[in-house]
Image 1: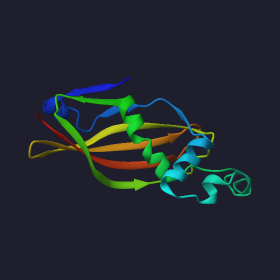
Image 2: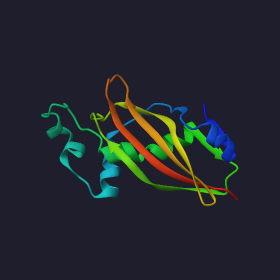
Image 3: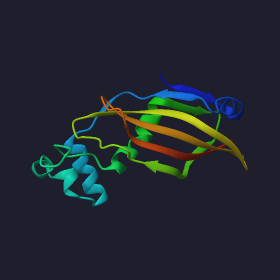
Length: 152
């Protein structure tokens, strides 16, 4: 279910609140290989299926940045901001990858509005993203992202 926030007043009211959880997304080797091709990061733990079987992970794992790159996809499922002219990504405060995400596993994201700060022409949000691997106790990615929303 998508949470819709309309305008600055609702945005301020949502500060500190959970926005929701995305659907599960299966991580495929094809996606990991494509990500490696796009980024030029072909580290064997991500792309060499046979060699990775000999690691403690027993197979290939997703690049942490691949996991983080799912944030826009998951954000579309979780939240919608209306009543603003536009929004931009402003950066990251913190990113951690506490546990591996195995290829073939499923991941989803939980989102929360950590803070809302006024800026000229709009607001800056700090969004908390927690990426969960199905069946794992530890998150695979925890991130604070910054987004700026501008009024029309």
